[in-house]
Amino acid sequence: MQDDALIHDPAGGMPRLIEIMRRLRDPETGCPRDIEQDFATIAPYTIEEAHEVADAIERRDWDDLRAELGDLLLQVVFHAQIARDRGLFGFGEVADAIADKMVARHPHVFGDESRDKTAAQQTRDWETVKATERAARAQTGVLDGVAQGLPALMRAVKLQKRAARVGFDWPGAGEVLDKVAEEAAELTEAAAGQSRERIEEEMGDLLFVLANLARHLGVDPETALRRTNAKFTRRFGQIEARLAAQGRRPEDATLAEMDALWDAAKVEE
Image (cartoon, rainbow, N blue to C red; front, side, top):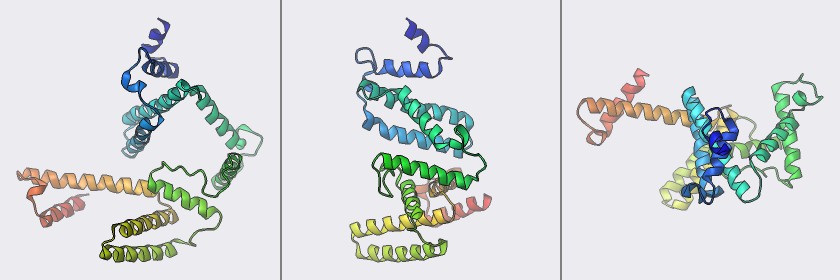
């Protein structure tokens, strides 16, 4: 069959991947697990694959990046096939929509506007175009369109950037640092009161202002935290390795012993 030839063609590219997904979702001959999926059930995997792409970039593992980009692309094809099955749209329309958007947002490349602009000016122009697009979708509020499903830290930064565009922002990092101290004190007070709801609220406030501080310092908090997670994992691995050399496990060691091994791992780095 022609479709089988495409499916087994190692150079089939996008048509091959789209056909594979169509076959997987075929109600009569497809995979039962793939058939029962919907947008909501695969959305968490889409987010997970995006993070795994970022992780491969962070580790500078380009072979893994190629594989992870493929996993992420599969998620797009999966969503598009579900949409086609429901008569909503298909992959071609997804590709056309983003192509149209890129052309519209880059008139200095695809139109008659001058390319003689700084990166900052191009960013401002980009935001103007996006604001026009939001208005066309009846998203008139400053914070409209910031996706609810983003990781909380990332969404906090996006919300703060939007608010900053209309002047709702601290003048500089110094004022944000003062706010960090204020929120930390409020969290300490809440923790003493043992009210879980209040503790959660104050912890959220502190995390939100820390995201704002990162923005003012020109740091992506998501990247910063990801790197710290990697550092913690690496150093704790050293603790485990040193204890294993003694025939012990972390649960067999005291906190003081593990702290000393942590400091040793830190010195080695």
